[in-house]
Image 1: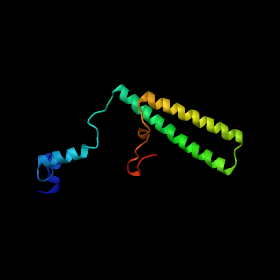
Image 2: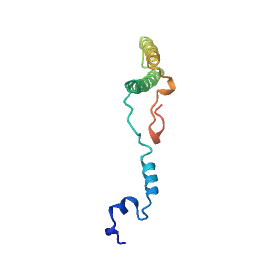
Image 3: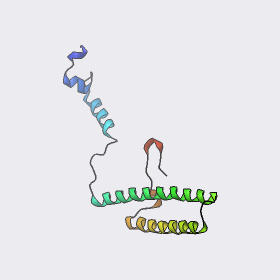
Image 4: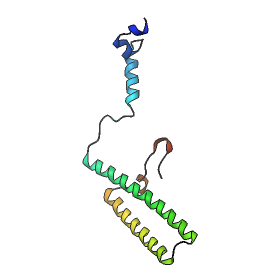
Length: 120
């Protein structure tokens, strides 16, 4: 049968007309996609809290590394070093409180970046 003469049914099912193969291919193609969106308000709140706390933790780690580089480089005074230490201590305490409030563990504060791996 010439290519331009294929019926719609043949185009959808392939030249063999195998409905089972078509169904299998359709299932395989749609399997990474969720069947429905979870609109549970507590789940949304939990997910948003997880995302925000993950970003805060990432920023905290970056700022802490920068502070350590500045301390090692000698560009901070003793007072600045003390204030940084107090600030990081307060942030750590508050993060622990928020993790408890939202029922999150340290291991959950991460983002999977697909082929790049985890964020932290």
